[in-house]
Structures are given as structure tokens and as C-alpha cells.
Length: 255
Image (cartoon, rainbow, N blue to C red):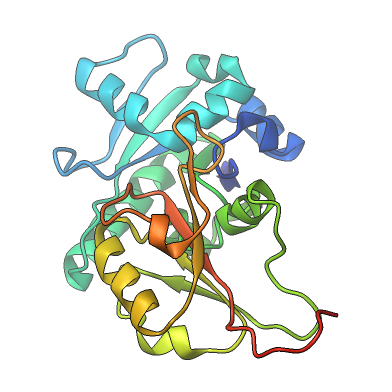
């Protein structure tokens, strides 16, 4: 007998956009898994509720997914936590070793019949660190499940009161932290995620290709900002910045 691992999407930022299913999973679990991108955390750390370490409290405060969940379910503070290193690096072998250790630490809790919920911003299946742990546990034979959340690009389109795609239009979701210049030539709508650090470069490419875009920074959060056109987009922006790039109009009536 072992516990269940759940990857739960908390949505884009507004606690009211969390699903009832995600809130129920948090309510019923034993341990909350907190992803930590801060390089000061090198090994997984388990912490019982009520015994908060100052450093762990800082990790908790900076975890956007946890703060969103706390807005929907205040009793989350009564749950035990495991802090998992999830550094934002691209060295494959180093990342693999870190993710292996994360999964092993969660497996120890599952072996004690504890249900663990990994909180992730947006949806767990879209560029989420949650899946690195999920697939390792699943391969090892543990019970796993995914609870979807509203993806950031759907929330951003709704916030800007526009559609993403219509009729036969294609939708392309692109990680803007990688080389996307060629992908900007794809037909249909392009969603550029996590563009913050490369915003100046992205803006240059949009200008050179004559493409317009709208951007939402920190969608659904208190510090949300909306930029209605490519010219208004700043050269620097936060990590949670998302652009919607529409296909060039070639004339004709809108259907």
C-alpha cells in the first residue's frame, strides 16, 4: 500500500480560477510538494506544519503556485511540506540527477502511505516541472494522477477579451526562452511563454517580421500588467510574461 502522487494545476494567478477538484486534492492530501527554483536549496527538505524554518518560509513566500492555492484554501498552512529543488538551468545531466533525487524523496513519503500534491502554476501538462517527478514515480509503479488547471494562455486571452484561434486557424505554443525566430513564421496564432529574459530580442523579431502582439504580465495576479500592442511591450519584463502573436491579415472579410 502506498500513497498517491498528484500534480495539481492551480491556474494562472487568480485563486477563483482554481478547480474544485484541485482544492479537494489539497484538502485530502498529507503533504504539499513545493518546487523551489532558488539555487540555495540543493537537496529535498521535508518540513512538518508548524515547524517553519526561516529559509523555508522564504521559499514558501516566493512560490507563486502555493500562494494562489492558499488564496483558495487557507487551511493549506496546516499541511506538511516537502521542498524540491527545481533550478532553472539547462544542463541535462545535472537536471536529471536533481529530478532523480526529488522523485526519490517523494517516493519515501508515498511509501509511508502519504498522499502528496505537487502544486504547479497553470496546468501540469504545459511546461511544468511537476512532470519530471511525475514520470519517474509513474515508471516506478506508484499511483499518480494529474489535475488540470486553466493554462496561462487561455486566461490571458480571456483577460484581453480576445479569441486565440477561430475556424481553421492553428495554435502554436512556444517556449520563448529558446530560439523561436523560425517558429514565428508558422501560420495561425503563436503563444510565446516565459519570454521575460529575452523580451528585447523577441520584440526585435516581431518588429522585423511586421508582426503585432499583445502581452499579459503576471496574468490574474495583483501586479498584472497588460500591453495591447508590440510597441508598448517593454524591453524587460517578468518571468510570467506571455505574448499572443496573431497571424498577419491578408485582407478579405472576417468570417
